[in-house]
Amino acid sequence: MSNQVPLQEGLFTWPSSQPQLLGSRCSQCAEAAFPAQPDCRSCGSRDTQIIELGDRGILWTWTIQTFMPKEPYLSDETPETFRPYGVGYVEMPGGVRVEARLQANSPEQLKIGMPMQLDIVPFRTDENGEQKMTFSFSAAEKA
Amino acid sequence: MDVAIIGIGLHRFGRSPDMSGMQQGASAVRAALADAGLSWADMQFAYGGSQDAGNADALVNELGLTGLQFTNIWNGCATGGSSLHAAYSAIKSGEYDLGVVVGFDKHPRGAFNPQPKEWGLDDWYGETGLMLTTQFFALKTQRYMHDHGITEDALIRVSEKAFANGSLTPTAWRQQALSYDEIANSAMISDPLRKYMFCSPAEGGAALIICNADKAHQYCSNPLFLKAAAVRTRHYGSFEVFAPSQAMKVADAPTVTASKAAFELAGIGPEDVDVMQLQDTDSGTEIMHMAENGFCKHGEQEKLLREGATGINGSMPINTDGGCLANGEPVGASGLRQVYEVCVQLRGEGGARQVPNNPRVGYTHVYGAPGISGVNIITR
Ligand SMILES: [Zn+2]
Image (tube, rainbow over all chains, first blue to last red; front, side, top):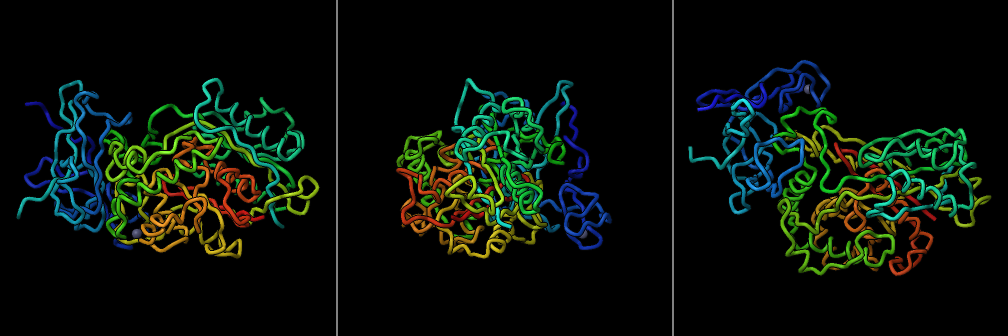
């Protein structure tokens, strides 16, 4: 099995049996952000802390990306192997809506208000055979 | 001191394969100068911008090295609005009496591909396919339809009206009217938005000659007046393009704040506007912008569109030249194309697309990444 590494450090806790999205919270006004920000966009304070935003949320809006984006999109797909993917904003218990890829890729599978769960999934394999992992959401299984 | 518009010029939007973007900008300036009966040497200042077609101040190589103050403006989709605002301020301040505003562009074919770093974002955001304006407009429209009971019927009617107006506009890129069914059955690009509900990057140029209103009658028997020019950026809590996350709290969109500021400057309200241009990068945004600019309540659009209120003969004619949907979007020029069209309407020169009953008050609105709006109010 190939080596798996996060596409970007600091977006989620991983590897972990129950990965969490990471963000930041302002110590002054308590607003949360994703990804973690050193400066607060709400009040301008520089006093922010890294926090776990959770691994479950509610779908706030969605769409389907039907065509393969141009660069800066960087996957290991070709126009022939490209599969449409869902994109949505998910309301996290940490108090922020996070934009993410969705596993579902047809309108029938998606509905505003549906419960979602975080998955850490392979996104592309680079030239050294390393699998780059990213975050994604799918319909939550019954808890 | 009031600000007048005494000349307008357009280089046709669409594709001009034999011309650079810069040449299309120069063509628009020459047309505006001819319209005003002035020459390039009369211009005391210029503001201009383009995204992909070079530095606007290099236009002097085409138009003449006259030594004028020429300032380049780059402000995303609001470039035209920002250039016009700068010219408005230059006249208001009393520093200058006469100048030109110009925008032009020539984009590669296909969708825009913005780079994360230029927007203060990390590479992963673009690499994983989250940084597309088409996605954002679809995501915002999807939620808006859910919140305000808007259906696909409204999205289709916006496009139907745009291409019908384009078919009446000799300078439009797309001059072919499309039927309701052709739009409804076109390919789904980014749910809920279909192929014929999106505008495309294009080419073109637009220019305006701006003048101290006290002196306008020296040059022109029918000056128009730029009563307001306002540009605003986003507040914390508004849902904007290129945002890896959004706050839960809700703030007014920059369109709402720019619109309010412009109405306050002009001393009039939305009910006084006779003809308008609202940014329509896609049919969903035109619907949202109707309410964000104060022309109706959220949710009323469905009924207004069904009744034809936004058509040329309706009570609130929107995008009489077909807007971005029928003209495409050369980013640097698009906001000034809107002003050009409103001026054509206020002068009564709209021909087959002329709004009836001698419109007196015009309104233009642009919106662009990463959450910026420009509004202008123009009167006879
Ligand atoms: Zn804060």
